[in-house]
Length: 204
View 1: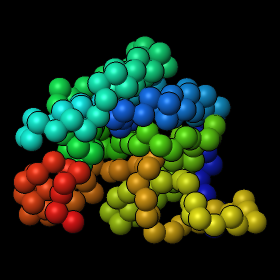
View 2: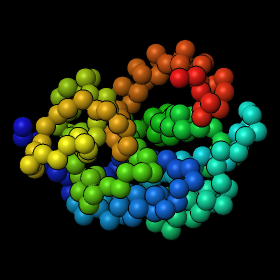
View 3: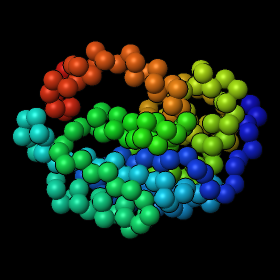
View 4: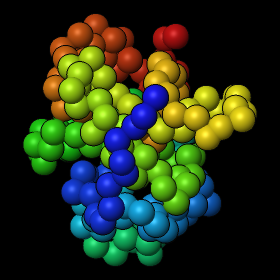
């Protein structure tokens, strides 16, 4: 399948990076984003969503404060113009993800955002690939709310091959605002259950 030609220059799409207490992983993610060769991130539109160490709900310590502080240092080293949103308490990955998406789609009112977990190291053309997928799916954007460009990580095709497949993992992906709003409208019962306990002790 033919894809849209890659964009060149700097993207104006806000970028959110989620972090906890793995600064050695975060360093590679940030370095990968800084090192994009085809389409660069706007450093002033990169946001670190940093979770905290101790749960306010239960008092359990889930993270190591020293490593959390180091994560913030790593981010600021790579993105001195970026923005740090450090949670004072441990809120868990689900709440942290929601916090980042609310920032992009409500506070910034952006139509699309790019979201990175701290354990996917982007290749040098990853942002360009995301932009290409975003543009290629615009004609049917109402049916493609989330998109990524890492393909099937369990398979090594002879490639390079480009095509569409259902999105499974959510490591480094694009998300459209309209789809996010539709998704959130259906999640109230899920959030009610998740918020009964710390995320790590959630009812599966």
